[in-house]
Each structure stands twice: as C-alpha cells, then as structure tokens.
Amino acid sequence: MVDIEHLQFGLETFGDIVANEDGSLQTAAASIRQIVREGKLADDLGIDVFGVGEHHRPDYSVSSPETVLAAISAVTKQVKLATAVTVLSSDDPVRVYERFATLDALSNGRAQVMLGRGSFTESFPLFGYDLTDYDDLFNEKLGLYDALRNEKAVTWSGKFRAALKNQEVYPKTENGKLETYIGIGGSPESVIRAVNVGYKVIIAIIGGQASRFKPYIELYHAAAKELGKPEFPIAVHSHGFIADDEDEAVEVAFKNIKANFDRIGLTRGWAPMSREQFEGETKVGSFYVGDPETVARRMAATIDLLDLGRFDLVYGAGNQTAAQRERMIELYGTKVIPRVKEILTEKAAVK
Image 1: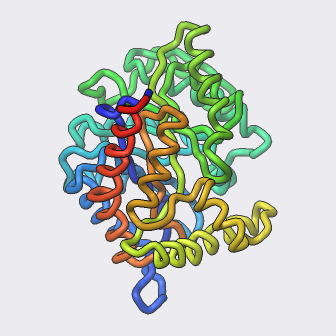
Image 2: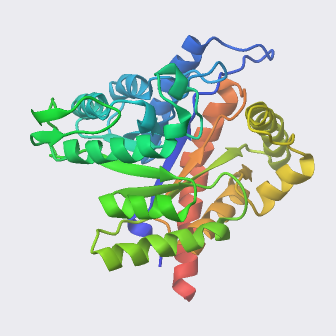
C-alpha cells in the first residue's frame, strides 16, 4: 500500500530550449536562467525534488547540471536538487563525487545524485570513450563511485581510469554520504545492479503502460530480500504537460513532445510519432497530459498500481514558452499534487 504521508513528487527538466511567444527560440544561456527561475518556483510551491538532466547536443541547454543546481540552491530552501541523470559512464567518479559533495554543502544537504549509463550517447566520443565499452564503463565506474561514497581512503584499480592508492575525496559531506539513485530503463540486469550496490532506484517510464514495469519492481524487492540488501520505495519519471484547459494541454503537448521525440528518433531509427500513438500514450501510456484533474487521476492510478514512493514529472519537452512551463509547474504544485494525495487517500479508505 502506498505510504501517502511520505510520498514524494518531483519535477525534472532535460534543459529543452525555451521558446519565445513569437515562436523563435531563446539562447541556451537564457534557457538555463529560466530553469533557475523554475527551480525557485518549484521550491516556493513545496515540490519535493527538482531534477536537471545532462546532455551534450544543441537541442538541450544543460551540459553541467550540478552547476545549474548550485545556482538554484542559492535561491531555494527546501527542494531536493537532483540530476536526471548524471552520465557516469563518460564521467570521472572522483570528480562526480566531489562536485556533488560541493553542491551538498552549498544546499545544506539537499544534493541528490542520479546515476545513469546514458540513453543519449553524445558524451562518449566527446570525452574520449568507446561505445563498445558501454556496459563495462558503467559497471567499473559505479564500483569506484560506491567505494568513494563511503568517504574513506580508497585503494582501487580498473581499466578505464588511473588507479587510486589510499586516496580520499573532498569535501566531506555533513551527512556522511551522498543520497544516490540509479536510473534504469527497465531491464532485469539494471535492477539487479542497483540492488547489489544498495542504491535507490528511479525507473524511466517513457513509453507504454505502467503495468509493464511492475515485474521489475517486484524483482527489485525480491532480489533485495534474497541478497540481504536495503529496500527503498521505488521512484519513476515520465513526461507530461498540464494546462488549465484539457484541449489546450493536449495540443501544446502533441506539438512539442512529437517534435522532441521525432528529432531524437532521427538518430535512433524511430518512425515519426503519429497522433494515434500520442493519444494512446496520453490515455493509457506514459504521457501525463491534460488539465489538473486528468493528470492527477492518471498519476494516482500509476502510483497505486506500482506502489511508488516518488513520482517525477518530466516537463518542458520540445520548445515550450516560459509562460507555459511556469503555469504547468504552478498547476502541478497547487492542483495536481494535492488531488493525487486526495485520490490515494480515498482509495486507501475502501481497501
């Protein structure tokens, strides 16, 4: 049963370029500054987590999410500051840990690392890595990150990085350990990997019905029990858009999500998104689109079905205006989240 009292709600942005009202696009720099404003808005509204993604391509503005999160930390008080995700495979675990320990200091313990293998692979050639080493890179670097996370001297050697001999990372965190999630896309191997290191899990549900992912959640809990590892509430993230008017929400979302997915699909062999496909995703799939009541009901159903501890809505896909993005955040914080809790409380009362 869902623990409604401790249920968390987050927002994530991948750093999409913001549109002006006339349809022209803002600069990446202006888009980054807009994200800082949105992070403050999320904090003002009491949203639990604000996440920023890492990308190295022209259609996204953020290549260094922890730097953006540091700026947000200066204008916020409560919201957790997360990456969505940090591409560990093409990064240096030592630098990752030290950057986030610094963010944790600046934010008074609100940093949250979300590690991933990288569904976008532009960072691999950029930083000198071979995609044929995709799995090995992540496994090795996760092992080193895990050792560093204990904040004690580490002696380590591997294939992709210089060895460490009795080395420590600085600064130390005040809590003694960085809060860390592993982002997974839905493979048994990814689930078991997360269980083995004892990390929290966030599942990317970006296509299809939520019920498809229930076996992975069951595997997580079963494996944790069998291996004697800690169990944590599962988190998921999915795309969405909220507007005051249902029809407006659908049209804005279709225009922008389609453009976003079609652009990505050019390099991945995806067929262009059809209206039928989009509507299927919004009605029973992974897009949470509509007015506050529609989105709240769909979110509550997913949270209840998967027994989640956290739901993050990915906002701003495509090239939405600042006004559209900010209104969506306002509706999420003031209408959707309270309504989701209300629906779940009503369901719990009749179970």
